[in-house]
Amino acid sequence: MLYNKQMKYYSLHHNAPKVTFSEAIIKGIAPDKGLYFPEDIHPLPKSFFENIEQYDEVEIAYQAIAQFVGNEIPENDLRAILKDVLNFEFPVVEVKKGSIATLELFHGPTMAFKDVGARFMAKCLGYFNRANKNKVNVLVATSGDTGGAVAKGFLGVPGIDVTILYPKGKVSDIQERQLTTLGKNITALEVDGVFDDCQRMVKTAFMDSDITEKVQLTSANSINVARWLPQMFYFLFTYKQLKSKNKDLVLSVPSGNFGNICAGIVAFKLGLPVKQLIAATNSNDTIVRYLSNGVYEPKPSIATLSNAMDVGDPSNFIRINTLFNNDLNLLKEKFTAFSFNDEETKKAIETLYTTYNYIADPHGAVGYLGLLKYGIAADEYGVFFETAHPVKFKAIVEQTISQELAIPEQIQSVLHKKKKSISIQNYEELKRFLLS
Ligand SMILES: *Cc1c(COP(=O)(O)O)cnc(C)c1O
Image 1 (tube, rainbow, N blue to C red):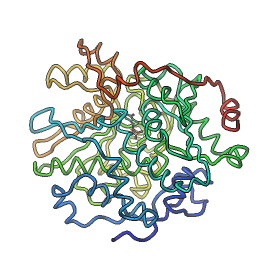
Image 2: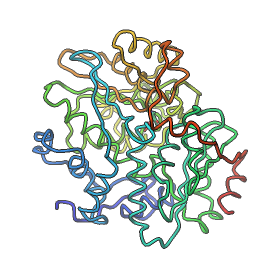
Image 3: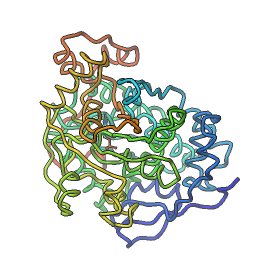
């Protein structure tokens, strides 16, 4: 195969040794606190994109990810992992005839788009840890959907314990059940604070040598390359399904930590024909402001209806800048960002339902608004990513469209389970837990 060499990852803080794929995912973040980034990205052959309709999802995913995994997982094993990870549908559903569609990313086990990244990371980590020599503790902060997807993805993986921090009262009931009811190797910590507090505690733990000397910690947020990179598959799957339309593709991605859209930019670097990538955000508009004035000024996160995107300091933005050589003008040629408030989001859920008979969740609705604001021309075709099933935001969606939602099987199975979590107030309590 083309990619039987090792891929190296370097730290974006440029003050740590280069590592291989397995080291990058086991460490999660570099010792200098920088995010890992692949040393080089080789575009795929033109013929891959020309013939993409002939390939199945596993083949597309394999071609896209092989170079990033390198020779640490042999081709057959990597294909088997991908086959396991991608065992559900990724349909593009047309919403406005000839103009706008949605890519439904919620058909996985927790009905969140994060299922793919979480499962891929769990399977790779399980693969590298198959001799079960060192126990790994996966530590993750969630603003909603990460927790459930990670919990489910890692459930029962030998040699791995998972600790999930989530902000008390800031995730939906279904989301909370998905991350607090599994038991086994999964522990949920309910933090008295907002998502940024959870994320800060996780970052502090990674820097705390009292902990890291005793416990092998890794992160399952999109800072981890194994969570981040597989998200590029979505962009390729979209292209496969829409290629025959012969229109310029405009993709709008509801964004919080900007991992998903950043993976889309990697797909673009691989040669994916896409005209414009839109990051659609809620009122947490740090990147929108950055694009307009060139000043990166993070703010504390604001709670919104699309709570999985309540991020004031998006961790993947440094990767996006790197992909565009830190050149703001170059970035702006391919990349736009728009922000929408809760009122606009509710209105969009309503319009999508009344005009197009499509039920969107608040995140997807923000993505849809991104396409409207951009303005899809006649020779373009817009796709917004539906990143969560509407039922995960049942209360607000039902109230907005005055219609009850049927509860899918994946969700039904957690509803009667009992919540089990540990309340923590501050970092010291997290530390005590990890060392216990
Ligand atoms: C995590 C999440 C997002 C944001 O994805 P990022 O990669 O962090 O930008 C959007 N929608 C839903 C439902 C999510 O769970």
